[in-house]
Image 1 (cartoon, rainbow, N blue to C red):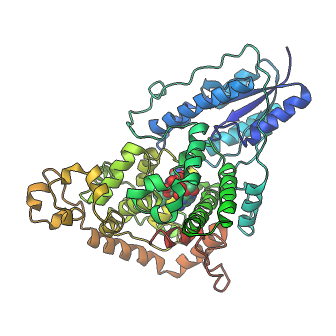
Image 2 (cartoon, protein in one colour):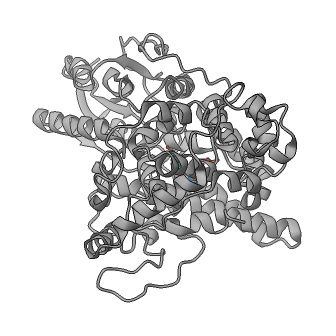
Image 3 (cartoon, rainbow, N blue to C red):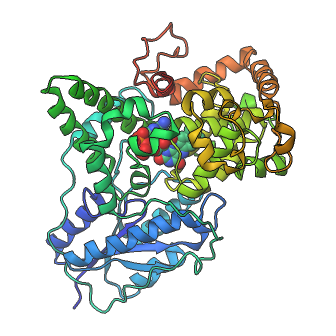
Amino acid sequence: MTAPIHIVWFKRDLRIADHGALAGAAERAATDGGVVLPLYVVEPGLWAGPDMAARHWGFVADSLAALRADLAALGQPLVVRVGEIIAVLDDLCAGGRVAGLYAHQETGNGWTFARDRRVRAWAKARGLRFDEPRQSGVIRSLAHRDGWAARWDRFMAQAPWPTPGALQPVDRLDPGTIPTADALGLRADPCPQRQPGGARAGLDLLDSFLDRRGRSYRWAMSSPVTAFDACSRLSPHLAWGTLSVRQVAQRTWAAQRTWKAETGAAAQAWRQSLRSFSARLHWHCHFAQKLEDAPRLEVDNLHRGYDGLRPDTADPERLAAWAEGRTGLPFVDACMRALRDTGYLNFRMRAMVQAVATYHLWLPWRDSGLVLARRFTDYDPGIHWPQAQMQAGTTGINTVRIYNPVKQGYDQDADGRFIRRWVPELAAVPDAFVHEPWRWDGAATLLGRGYPAPVVDHQQAARAARERVHAVRRSAAFRDEADRIQTRHGSRRSGLRQRGGSNGPRAPATAPEQGQFDFDAR
Ligand SMILES: Cc1cc2nc3c(=O)[nH]c(=O)nc-3n(C[C@H](O)[C@H](O)[C@H](O)COP(=O)(O)OP(=O)(O)OC[C@H]3O[C@@H](n4cnc5c(N)ncnc54)[C@H](O)[C@@H]3O)c2cc1C
């Protein structure tokens, strides 16, 4: 058999529904009598990166097994190879039958950006067709942000890509095994409550969110007591592509249409919650667009006025205390321990722990960002690095927001039940002092013995950080660069002043630069 082979290279798009690369390859195969070869390459170079961890691999391995089964049901199971991508492609091309390569555009870390450039050059040198459709609202080689939101709306409203009805099997091809984290050499990373991968698990979450859990979303999203259930928990599925943003957006819009026609308190709650949720799907791509446009922000301050402000290397003891939930600030420690064991934190708590690391503990955002990247099952460089910088105040275009970790505890965990669950060392501390055990009469019996004394006086540390940051922001040169950044990366809905312009329009609650806190703060 000499049918041409069309390779679909799966990356962060581990599904068969709404899959532009798979649909494109299948359409091509239907016209030239070819076959589709679905391929996932486990790249040791990627997995050795400082931002990757075994919990990511666990989610990906679950998703690969599910994808393999879904593709097998169509006629050709997923082929898995371990190795460097060009070597794997060269090997598959050796028979001379490969006619095309299809893969989604990816807004990844520096390693994948460079890897994708190499693959493009390789395909060009061989004269091989290489199609790279997009799978989200992120636009490659974007000249400016004007009209971006309308383009997002249009893309999400388009019909999803059709799933092929059947795939012809590729002859004499070993599907390969999905390696274990150990075989990949990944460090042990116990995460007993990690979310399972696979498209089915993602669809079940989407169903339960839109049928039941999402009703209180708008009011319950900020507290870690309620957010683990009331938030959608779809992030790892969107990050690794077991669901597409479009699938989720269209299901959400359908639910919104249903509730629009209803009256009563429940319908009102659903409408408000789904509006908030819908806005966040937009932010998913809004933040990723920033990294797409400026890949350097994975490692460099977006606003260079902050260069040299924080130390280049983190104080190892402070970083370890924060990462392991031993800062002596109970609410911060509870969040970091919950994250270690579940792979998840809600947005407000992510923002708080990154703010505490970078302001109170004065750690470089890249170092704390790497710890969080490894701990979030949903690690998605496109969202992660712009957010890591935003919460550290180094974008230059966002309000400096130094969370008070004790006040956050009182606000979001009033009776201390989240703290008590994750910090059992505080069992003997009366309720009134569980947020601030250092104020308890019995503190001497606990601090420095069963539980650490606070690594910093959080109020003093916040004051010192604020002064240092504001000193940078006062200069005229700072404003000029901030205006340039706002023009290039800022939301056109944010209401922030455009360079050379007067005050922009008022920010609606859904503007990503500020809106994410507006109703979170209630
Ligand atoms: C320092 C920091 C790092 C972050 N790193 C990541 C990351 O690596 N991967 C990731 O998916 N999210 C990241 N976020 C954004 C956000 O916290 C998570 O998307 C959200 O908490 C995931 O939970 P969920 O799916 O239940 O969200 P829901 O509240 O149910 O929201 C639905 C989806 O909308 C998107 N979304 C929600 N909030 C935001 C936001 N503020 N910015 C951008 N997109 C958003 C996500 O895709 C999310 O899955 C980060 C936030 C901060 C402050």
